[in-house]
Length: 202
Length: 202
Picture 1 (spheres, chains in turn yellow, red):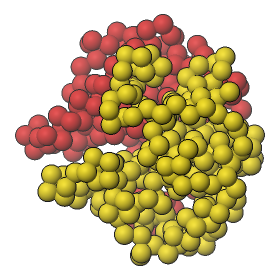
Picture 2 (cartoon, one colour):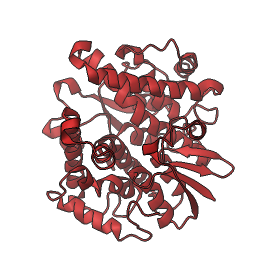
Picture 3 (cartoon, one colour):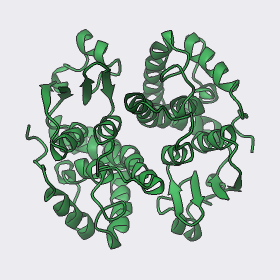
Picture 4 (cartoon, helix red, strand yellow):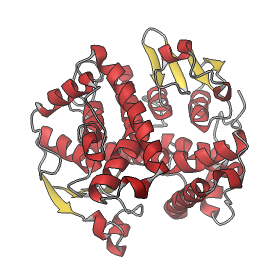
């Protein structure tokens, strides 16, 4: 059975959990409290020298880090990955966009504000820059969803799961999703998918 | 024929050019001077609303942004992508690692120092943080290459091309690769691959 090393409030870990649940793949969850340094212990660093969750233990193969590597491995040959090569590349385009423009801005601000309980005064200029970049990413997403039900090929795919993870909890970092009706409607559609559970649910 | 919108000093664009040349795929290069704002013109934003290069125009399909989406599309069914699903996931793990830990640190510092000619005094704390994160990424890479010829399955793959793009020019951002003998030997192996050309060569 797969073993997922994860921290429940993590959006990156949530991507893996959403895929496992949608595909009804059995797995064992091993909780790693990153706030208490449990992903930086010598024991954990042997499993992932980069000291991060989520980490998937694949029986007979080894350890796989990085949320997008994990979900593409788990969803191999499923309907969460488009069969058309150009659509599959479009899916990766959105996943790259998420990793470069969404997670480091919307995800990081949420971690600072919500998990580390940092104040606006403590964060200063860094917070202003990240919020600006986060809103720019939301603008791109809102524009893309103006005439689409899902991000790629009008079907639910890894692209939606990837973007949804941090976008649907953007408000926890102080982002206002009110001016993004397409994004909000798309979030509702994803929350209606089979196997969907809220972010911190096991 | 494919059309690649690119800025020659870009490591992200270089990834696409290395794959095109290795696979001997004919393409037309359209140079976009990002320093003069040519990727933010109304005309370019229609092609890529995110205003960035590289961008691949695929005849009959449309525009594909994001270097890793582009190279995975171009290399489909070639020997640059492992056929084993776990090895393919390992390839994506390294590409995600590159995008999150290498490009935003080593790539960004190079852009600031080399392209924008910013001084250490102008950059201040931001430079110190990025260099620390960049060296941490190099440590992970050096460790991974201690007993490997290439990053995945002992074969040259997209993972190597992705990481090589910014790592082999890290010195242009002031990073010292001297303490990284495994990384330097791996860079030399990649520079010996078929179709290899220096970064800024068309």
